[in-house]
Length: 504
Image: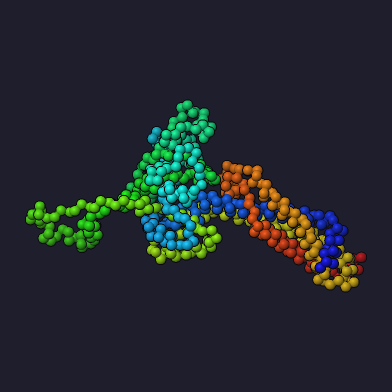
């Protein structure tokens, strides 16, 4: 081995030009591979942080009646089917050891009604219990004006992005109740007319839900203006409201509605069907001789206080424990929900988030494809260069074969040359790539483009390299080295002493 490496090193020094060309290719390829893997890992980590941990969790439960899986941004604001079995779902989720947190939510489109114009606007509403929401997503946004709603308080948290959009359409600047105009948060247009700026601290929303003609227009008091920590232009379309107001707006049963008690006589009447209903209009009991002596229907008992979770939701966001096998957890959860006859299904976050999750995976796949193509180009160039080198050294190789060098020795010599070049230049490229990945986040490169924010995994370009990522890059470099050396080795071992003599 030592002899092979010694000869290989000598050959590298004798052919400095070709060795340098191969080395530059290996350095560039290793550098780009390292940075590319860092971008992919940074993007995956950013998506996990901003979408999974900050907006909708790992898994989403939706109704079996829901036609598609995309509930976050459905086409044309399609309706999300209601989930009426949350109490059963809650018991099942609480019994699953791999579930860390879960949060029931209402989510649908609402029409914004401007009191000064006839032009409607639209916004997505997410109905939540604010206290539970804060436990699940504690730091996904910050309140830049106003305050966080108190438990049980009727409230709307308005995203600053949506506020700017509505101002552009309706010339109304929304403020939290009791709040004042903050110059730093105004847009240029609003700032130019600050002295005559129309303001409002409430918003009227009309629920939009297909198949239900009982939606209501609700005036929501604005308690706070929020700004999402990342992907604000995407998440900024979603207004957070208390779950009871949301249900009233969408025409769903609220917890108070569910608490209403129906007298048993009315339950019996409502339960009649077919011939039983006909019997109401026949028989001797239709005539009452003395109605005053007949007992009157008893009043319904006072409704017991009900929790918000007794009403209707549209989805349940779930976070899984760290290290849990995602596919197994999803399969087990669906099995448990099916056994519990809950009439819902669990889907992964990337399906529930629709085009946003799909686009993230597409960008990730495109980056992986780019790195793979880079490998292929590097392999082709190195193979061509080494093969030309082997043919030019036919006399030298033929002489070595004539004095007793075996084919394995010749093959090992070429593999040794490639390995030394890969170790020196490829290793240098990896180290340079690691340094670049560490430096790039310090530059705080940002963008306002939504697609680039998905690529960045947030508001800032933040590539990330872990030890497994570095190990993957080294493995990729080894694969490139071996593949690149195979064909030149084959060419070299086929050179015979006769070839050397004939060339001379």
